[in-house]
Length: 291
Length: 163
Ligand SMILES: Cc1cc2nc3c(=O)[nH]c(=O)nc-3n(C[C@H](O)[C@H](O)[C@H](O)COP(=O)(O)OP(=O)(O)OC[C@H]3O[C@@H](n4cnc5c(N)ncnc54)[C@H](O)[C@@H]3O)c2cc1C
Ligand code: FES
Ligand code: FES
Picture 1 (spheres, protein in one colour):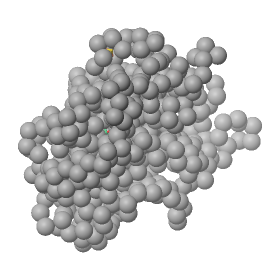
Picture 2 (cartoon, rainbow over the protein chains, first blue to last red):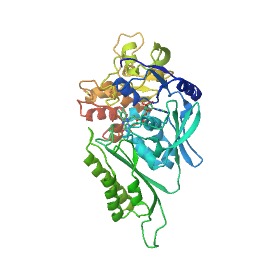
Picture 3 (spheres, rainbow over the protein chains, first blue to last red):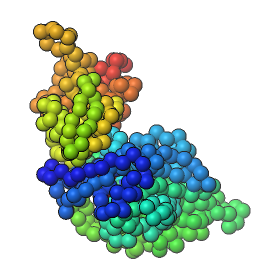
Picture 4 (spheres, each protein chain N blue to C red):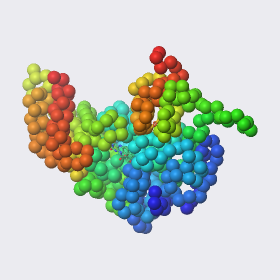
């Protein structure tokens, strides 16, 4: 590394707030995004860094007031090992297992994935599809922002310069089903070309004899197909109230292909991403429908 | 600059350094422990893998400020030397297994592979091909094709890989 920025390592959240209130300071959590950027000298290097790693107030996985709450510093390894996550949100455990390899999972944090705001962040579609909210804090107090409002533009977040992401909260809905799929070049350590999370609840069957219950509260979120992680709202509407039949799957896949406007880049082409996203959705619906 | 205290291979270390210096550079340049290698400097190759409080991390991604109070283990800590003896160090079980199976060729990935393999075995991992592959998925090797590395870790994990 060329120049080494100076760093402070507070132990108390309150001290971190005070540092951030004084002047713009760049937070570091697990460092798996930031250290790469610093070493590669990408962008304007920060001259001052605040190290969050010692803030135990940002750790821990709990269930309270009907929501799963994960501290921003929760690592992927902690998510994979958490009995609470496995019970309440297995799809997040599944997503965590696809991120990097052991070395990355041991340091990389959920909060870092959220704050880094990469359109390819693999947990972000899961958080969107699960209606997660983010608790942000600063010396001015705490506020909550919905995940659907958190990434306004390419690599931008709702965080003010003096704010930290404290916790990720996911409401626990009885009977919610969720699925996750990541398409990359190889199993470990690969950035996704398309990443998708789908959520729904089974509604009342329309007629007593129909086998498949119609889906309600459908959520479909994707990464790597736009400048930010997105909800595919037109496709959600096409799925809402419909049972997971072959007809529904065909129509939803078509709706998704029409709704997405991905880009060509070094990892993939727009056309590939659109086709793959539609196929992945089709398959998820087929698997859920059991046909 | 700030004072950071930690242990490396059981020796207590005190350094006065910029807190954002990479653990990799502190090991290689400040502590002259050059066994840990730099491949990519971006977390992709695992050549710099060391154990931090027993878990494998990429030393190129960890700033020294986050090592305060931690236990660091590097490849230099695997072999043991009798205190005051002139005899060459005794390789640990995993190093010996790498020699036996031919798990090292050019050797650049070997320190990282050994530490990832050590963590796997210490966590109770056995001679299970898929589990070993997952444990070393963050370590690239351009020479061996991985098979002999996996055999070595399986061998050292205590049971017969064929069993
Ligand atoms: C080899 C490799 C493989 C990877 N594979 C994947 C992958 O498969 N999928 C994937 O999604 N990502 C992947 N990543 C990216 C990275 O590991 C993740 O995005 C990770 O979650 C980042 O977390 P971190 O704690 O390391 O973040 P850091 O690098 O510490 O921080 C990232 C950014 O977020 C900010 N930040 C962090 N925490 C907070 C907070 N609490 N409040 C405010 N701002 C904060 C920092 O200022 C910085 O801008 C990979 C990275 C590497 C090096
Ligand atoms: S040098 Fe650290 S992972 Fe390649
Ligand atoms: S032995 Fe040469 S890279 Fe692995």
